[in-house]
Image 1 (tube, rainbow, N blue to C red):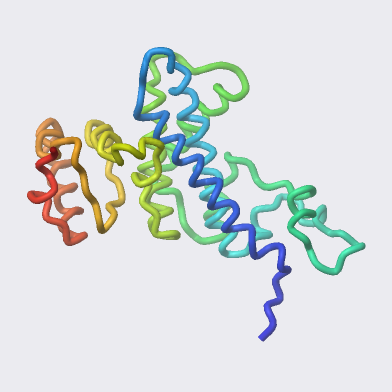
Image 2: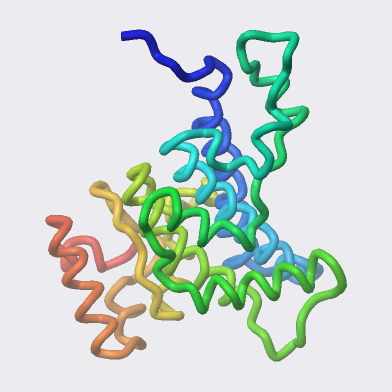
Length: 236
């Protein structure tokens, strides 16, 4: 059976996904690491987290059909060409904005964002940073970014693309150890790779500072993945 979809459209989900992973990589880095002179990384973590969220959501919707992410389909019509070429789509296409993505996700797939309130907090912070200035100093922007990434983005991309957010970061020399430490400190859950491994932190020590409820739930999640926490918790 012939594929009725224009050839140019079939490339869109994969292309969006590639850029989304890049934004996630930077968002994780900016939200976790800090050195003097890097105060702007807190703002950048919000911008990159929002970009990652927007693009991952578009990739999910585009899997249903790439045209669903475009606001004005008629602008994509090119009477001079029988096929809808990718270059023409890039030039003429206008996709939905970040604030529209939760509704577009639901309309296209029947799914809701796991934490809509968190999405709204990040959306407001992102708009303030992008269009005016950084929000009040009372707002922990790094934590807000991580909450968005691991309450909303991580469960969605695990389900749709089998991706684990902790594996995308810029600290390639160490791995995701310090990212894990930061997530545990904030009591945030994360999707767990089957080959999960840490060498730089003591997982038992990190978990000893957490609430009993969080610790028990995380241990349960490791067990469900067939991982023995006792064997991987000792650190270096």
